[in-house]
Length: 141
Image (cartoon, rainbow, N blue to C red; front, top):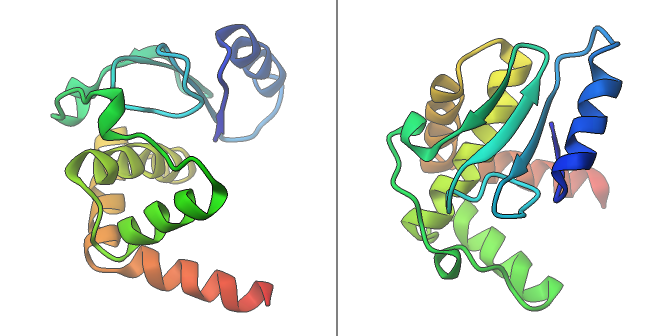
């Protein structure tokens, strides 16, 4: 899965990937984000389809940009990220994480985005995502 801030670049990535046998999803949030923000619609280009994604597809309402605002520094952003993994994220933050992780899960496993979202949500709630991240940190040290 590749996120891109530019729709033009997202289309170029799509053209490059379509000539491969890879499973892929390229996304561009129409609000200019390089990920699904749930503040509006997003363009998703994959080996299965080329479509406009709406938060309604996951039965989620849209959020204000202020509800998903990241940190001003890397340290602030890392704290937000670890808070989400520790079950202390807001509904908006959790849903954005699950929408993006869910698309990646769906792409790799040939699932629907809704199915991928449900698996990501379960992983976050059961702290499996936190355990995986902790294990990754152990390997990198």
